[in-house]
Amino acid sequence: MKQNIRRILAVLCMAVCLFALTACSTSAEDAGESLDPMLAAQVNQEAEEWADAITSVTEDEAEEVQARLKKAKQNAVAEAVAAWINVSGDTGAFVQVNQSVAEETEDGDYVSTLDVQFEKRGATMKMFFEVQNNTLVPVSISIAPKYTTGENMTRAAMNTLMGMGTVFLVLIFISLIIGCFKYINAFDSKMKADKAASASAPAPAPVSAPAPAAAEEELADDLELVAVITAAIAATTNSSADGLVVRSIKRAPGAKWKRA
Image 1 (cartoon, rainbow, N blue to C red):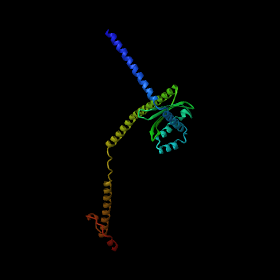
Image 2: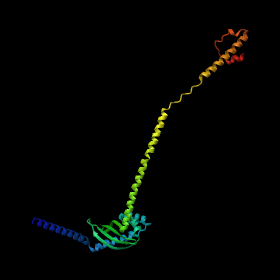
Image 3: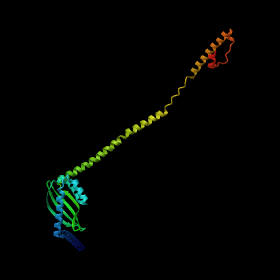
Image 4: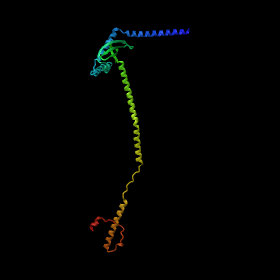
């Protein structure tokens, strides 16, 4: 009995949950449809006009148009022009707007979702508007091209390949740097060994002047001079040279020699 009651309660809880979800979805749909048709048409028309104006800008005109928009403080449109130039190569030229849906956001602003057809593929454009002085002013615009599953897989594979390639290149570079450490250590050890060898080598002995040879030569010259003087004195006095002893030799001034 108790088990049957539990089962009934579980079924009732599930039914209540399903009704609550249905009510939420219905209220969400009602909220989306509660926008006044005239206002929705105005928002969509404004969005379509901006889409036509943005997609008509060429790459050569982009910089000039962006400068004018920024000067007019329409930064959202200027950013949308830059986004359009980035995706224009994938989408091609503008063809038409297939569908546009306007809704009111939680902040009281408005958003228009456009299904746009281009030459190469379709794209989704979302434009958010604020009401300023009874005028719809775009505050955010996005462009999302619709790629096929194969294109998305190819782009994902390319991104993965580029990421892994970058990682492997960095690892190879780091391994090369680590491999060079042994050469750096060998060069450092060689420099230290050269410094140690130059510090331990004995200093060369200073070369002394040949003083003894010069002294012997000077002594020989003095002996010859003494012998010559002794012979001269002995010849002048008619005496023997054996009894003469020379104590010292002094050079006489040059003036006396000149008078002699």
